[in-house]
Length: 372
Length: 235
Image (cartoon, rainbow over all chains, first blue to last red):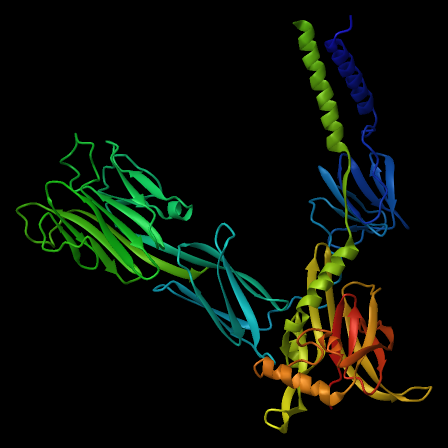
């Protein structure tokens, strides 16, 4: 009885024999010949090469002639001289137009059409300007045009979504502002004359870190030289999360924050009042917890939690929090600036000088909006 | 057990042969240069009225996707002010257009000059001499029309209304608000004219000669579907 496996074995042996016989030929005879066509593009794998003769060009597969063309050109438009041949490594790309072949080894397509105009600058001049305070960008157009023309500016975010658009005139200017941080692609478009792409960068620079570190996700480690952990939540809100839970210490304590109504960037600041005193304690970085939401025009400091045994001071541009009893206690503090500093420190119960802090944790946020 | 192993080996050999043959078969895709050229020209035709316009010939020569225009004064009757008014209009004298689409780079350079001549068979014509440079060597769809106004006063009144609608920016003859709008409004008539393309090997440029009737406002050089209006430079 003939079983299925016998058929398989027979078919396999037959194919193997065919492959062995085919490999004895100079080039693979099993491959199909090049279809004769005009106005089409080929990808040829195997031992193909092309040679230019006096009045025609031949495409060879090994030693066998596969096709003939009127003349062979390289993809950049340079014709092959008589006797010249082209061989490619792994694959040969061939464009056949009106009986003429264009050869390329890397797949870059040939361009049809001579350059009669030459490379030319734009008929107008563009001046780019930006402002950190409101995160606004402007483009000023100048040009000796016979009459003013309309220009559209489209701004796309990292996902390719249209964020904002504006129209202006040449001569004249266009301005737009960006409500969220990110890297944006700006399309300056007035077809057919003007079609330019630029990059606009809107971000928060985190600077002057003192005993502080920035994290983009949870960090529960005990860090020896860090008393302030800064968690950057901006990307979570941009991805559309409604709320985020941040785990801050080895004990697994967490803070859950919901998405802010308006934000340019958003940070959670978790501070430990004392590095040395709690070696056996895992409940670190919960002594003073603040949220700093940076909007298009301001920085909003929001108090979340306080605990511990020392007196805490929180500075923005001034002292905004003096825990546990005052005199400065702002649960919310709004600073209208592009520069948002935050400092947290502890005072021992016997120390009454607020400029003599211990265990400083310091960070400066600076909104930066500039053309890339 | 052993025969199952042989079967697997055979299957692997078959799979190798099939995959090897499939990987070495030439793959091909159709390329339609005519469609790509058509798309490029269609895009240019759509955006031709908003092409940037410059006065200086040097500036025109230094850029792409610009039109060279000259400003002239036209006269129309303002029905509100009940008087004849003069207003500026732009005459398109040259274009440098470019659009790459797929494998095709479509570029065209046109620059018009014209003079009055008498035909050998009699009768005056305006002979447009258009300097033509083109990235593709063949122009199979080229045709040339002359735009002859039915009523010149009516035409300039229409242009004047356009001038006010554009908030006192000068309209461009033949281009504003779009190419062929004045034909659709019944103000001008496009008639085919005789033309000849003469190639000058010394300068590498071609000259397009078109014999338009003296009453023609402008001519339209059409590389279908791109229709380009060109006017006579003022003296």
